[in-house]
Length: 365
Image (tube, rainbow, N blue to C red; front, side):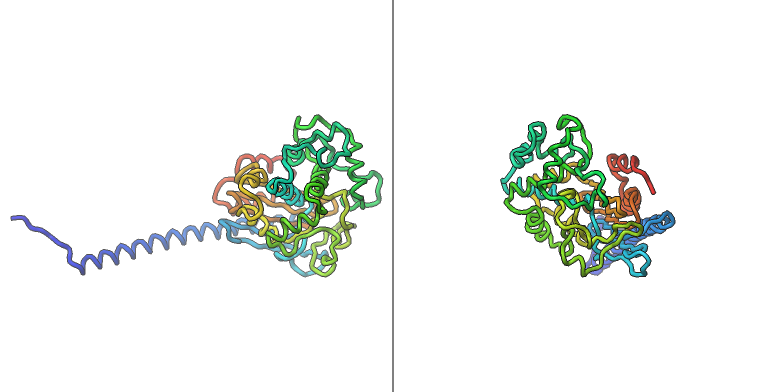
């Protein structure tokens, strides 16, 4: 005799309920484990930041993991001697982070078919001498131009960043400097190269550099507290002041100086910089082709903006911008490795080798 067993509806329903309960339990346990790991990562990051205050750190740090803000920490005050705390809307000098906007402006113009990064700079700034006219826009972007680091006046009574300089004088001074090496031979940091790129943006777009950046980058990205030195609005908002610098009041800095045009001279907030990263990475500003030129490293990026008068703003992006850290300090320079420590703490993966090598070679406060 063959005996056949057949599940009745009641047994099947009970089995389905049991399986669903087991699935919920497994998912709940996994979620709790992930949440616990994330909490530990954030606690580790907070601990590293708190320890940095013993070495003089003062500033604000925002960290994002998997697209979600997991850390916002204020340490010290944007006003030396005050008890007011930093927050995500505190306006700060971003120094060389400005180069992100300059590079994006050039790539936006390429996307609009108004220039090519393969073009020679002489096409847009014809007054340059022959040895400099052949430098390509790509070489300026990648800092392989052979230009000097800066074109400031020697012996001025104010720091180089704050010298007042016209467009004509800046271009004349850049033109007069001998090249340090043939264009393309090697990489060497150059603020002057990005000032030339600002002039290129003006020539190709037919608009002042600041206006093009506002119209094509700042406004489309939804940035409400990002702009340039000298704007009237900075006199009426909270701005981070350098803790120990004679010239540490950004609302008094010169408007439109071509000693820093394209290479520095912008202000922003942690909230706006986070919105900028998201807008860029999502493709709202640049096409995929141009975006790949903006992020040549691919999934990771590192930007440091420091000023000798007492400020530093740093950005580290990981996993294609899904994780990132924005750090601002009004306590001098040398905090980029700290931004790397925070990035390592919040990420669930080891830092990319190229980023680790870059951070290892930097002085640590």
